[in-house]
Image (cartoon, rainbow over all chains, first blue to last red; front, side, top):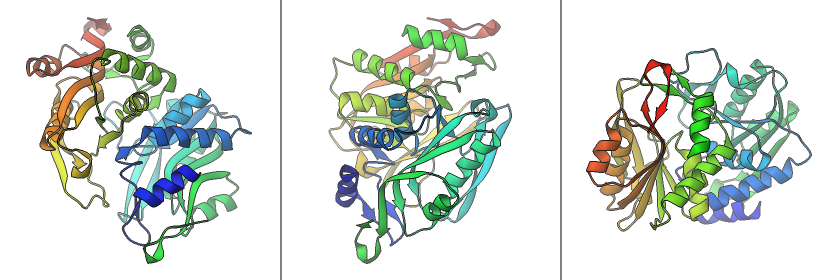
Length: 189
Length: 189
């Protein structure tokens, strides 16, 4: 997706050769016009699939997920990082390892919102080691749902999450695939 | 907003006479069509105002904020509940007291994203005691911005946040104002 790649080159900040900061348009300040274009790209790329639900994780996945859900006319469920006090019923949970923060955290989805037979599109902002995506897949499969596709805004292809998930048979559509950020330069695949 | 009120009556769950659970359409599972209608209502109600930025707080404010930002063609900034590892620059912070959880937490916005002269529309899912709204106002004002309006999806008018903020001179537009939830019955103003 050219618009996204241009925006990454213009406004993305390389913090280390593994960490890209896109907080001016994607995960702190959000450009709704870009999000709308992102949702169009997901809709187009998965136009051969039928989904009845989108699953993402708070917080940065919510904006592209909701805009895509609007286009596909399907609900969006976002996994929570802390169980809210009002989530008293059963929940599906999974552990995510953050390599950036070097810590683990739990994500959970109320079991009300994942049903056997659901055909789920997972959406997230980043794919690096794939820990968050695998946790979302686990939650979907705990509920008996099938993951029909994974839509990623930015994939760091120099980390192995995308490769592993594709080898497991999941269909991943990443709108920008970064091959390298070494030498303070972003190279796309 | 009739569509929202009907949805609250249909799918909202009264947990106690002060806690309303709307996780099937607003803050865990999200109905993107409803969010779009909510954003239309905010756009209409604030059509006499000019804003250049929307400020909200993760996570439940993001969906209505981004959809409204798309309609108004302005960026959305969401305050973070935990400072991310990549937020290395200065930040404006404020403390929110959660009455539901009886605990305090900090929210923060990078100082890059609030500028003197900004005219800000605050959007959030709930207004009860007004602690989150006051924290967002504080963050906006720390940056020299002016809060031109506060758009709330559901106001619990039996708690005093809305009253206090209106007395302070803030313009609040709440799409559903709940007067009472006692007796297991929701009454709107």
